[in-house]
Amino acid sequence: MTDWIAEEKKYYMQTRRQPIVIVRGLGAKVWDEHGKEYLDFTAGWAVNNIGHCHPAVVKAVQEQVATLTQTSNQFFTVPQLKLAKLLVESSGMGKVFFCNSGAEANEGAIKLARKYGKLHKSGAYEVIAADNSFHGRTLTTVAATGNVHYQEPFTPMPDGFKHVPFGDIEAIKLATTPKTVAVLLEPVQGEGGVNVPPPDYLRQVRQWCTERGLLLILDEVQTGMGRLGTLFGFQRYQADPDVITLAKGLGGGVPVGAFLAKDSCAVLVPGEHGSTFGGNPLVCAAALASTEWLIDHKIWENARKMGERLMRGLNDLYKSFPKEIKEVRGVGLLQGVETREDVAGAVITACNAEGLLLNPARPNVVRFMPPLTITEQDVDEALVRLSRACAKVFSVKA
Ligand SMILES: *Cc1c(COP(=O)(O)O)cnc(C)c1O
Image 1 (cartoon, rainbow, N blue to C red):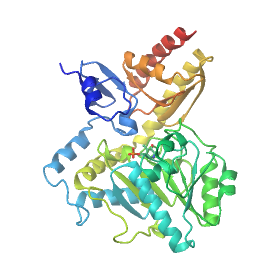
Image 2 (tube, rainbow, N blue to C red; image 1 turned 60 degrees about the vertical axis):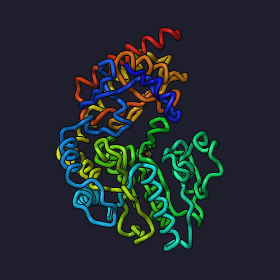
Image 3 (cartoon, protein in one colour; image 1 turned 30 degrees about the horizontal axis):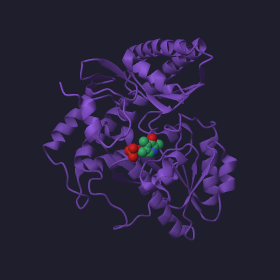
Image 4 (spheres, rainbow, N blue to C red; image 1 turned 90 degrees about the vertical axis):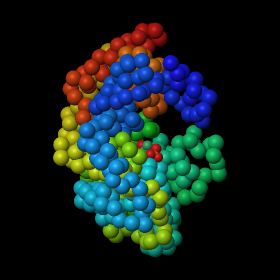
């Protein structure tokens, strides 16, 4: 049998992986090369919102790949325009542009904001973003990301970003200058450790942006497509953004990103932005099938219900281990358990052994982001596996 982990060391530029070779997925489960089954509470990094290999997505991809895969944006294609209509109408935005990833979606949104600044705000170009945010790995989105750890190896950073504490409206007000053109935030911070702002925060930011003529850009790459218990995260917070960015859960598993803007700020004109693969018919057929299914089944309602169930279970876990667990937090099916020490890695390794996949958002935060189609039974089973894993890790420590 091939040793895939050795092959990886030899051939792949080193990132960081769990030593598991996943060969198959269905719904909320995946199987490794030895046939071991796991409950997947990473969901391809908050991507497989309607589960692995959902039949609606499989069918759409199979049909589309045999019909038309790629044309470039020099031409119209029907799957792209159907998806455009569905996203624009369900978000209340005006126009959409498709790309291939979350970073690229944010790059597009930042370019749009700069163009808007040139047209309407005397060349203002600065974007206020939050500490502990995550907006991507390209140079500009790393500069937007509020975490020096991701920036240091690659300085100098592109100019034009200011960072303020997340959840603090006064900090945004203080950071605003005549050079400011936009505020860029995640409705709930995902990679930063599942950080939930005060309930009023986004509404207050919206109000400030309106007063000062700033664009409110919400990075919904992780929170969009039902994860917070509403189709888009902003719908939970009455924050009516000017621009939103999407990726992760949009494509039902295939790589597709998008940014959407209100007509009042959809200022890009022909020649200013583009993408060779962006929104090609194959990925748009997948995204259309996934998004239609998700909307038809109001999957955010299940996300809300299962989120409450998961949170009850995590709070029970907290009661069992009050000395080891500091806090349980999250919204919908984006949740985190913060431990008092940096043991997220150890908890996750123990969970892997029990047949549960999770992600360490921080060294001290275990993140839960299962498919939104998850059942009560699978939530309960995941909690059983998690508490067995915690018992092992915490008893070794004690
Ligand atoms: C993952 C993520 C990104 C980056 O998306 P990629 O597809 O990895 O480029 C940007 N913003 C948020 C909030 C994310 O969670």
